View 1 (cartoon, rainbow, N blue to C red):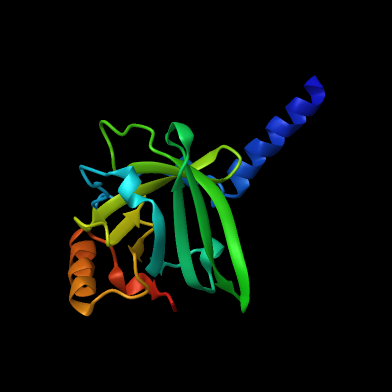
View 2 (cartoon, rainbow, N blue to C red):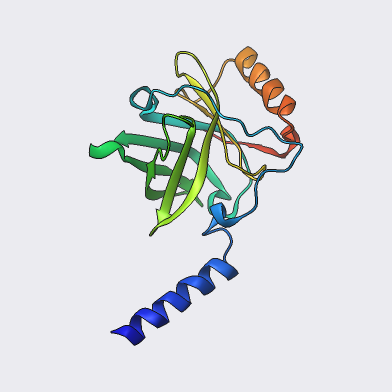
Length: 181
């Protein structure tokens, strides 16, 4: 049994070393030119429900995904069930994960999300509508960015305002991929 645990531990270390997409939170902090500060207040219960992906930065794990949504469900003890779904190559695709809010008193907008064992990645709520109709999500690095909405489309004036806010934070908005809904 000890030998098996030693082999599994070594394998997981190797996965962490050779597959950085599995351990995003192991990466360095944000680029100095990008503001990754989060919202100062987050009502997790109001954040629950369905969100439509309006735009995102390109990532291997979502490449080619259309009709992308994220469904959040509050579970007992404050945990969150995450179901990301959409269409990939014309077929339904789904990833089920979990999220948590590690320090809600000090950093309410900083969550952690996991889709694989205990490997958690940053999930930062950067911008949030007062009525919780749209959100901008990032991480501690400038590699990840999503624009989410409660509806499949955002009004153009709201979208332009969000793009200005995102650009003012230092993100390159030309890198956004617009998601077909």
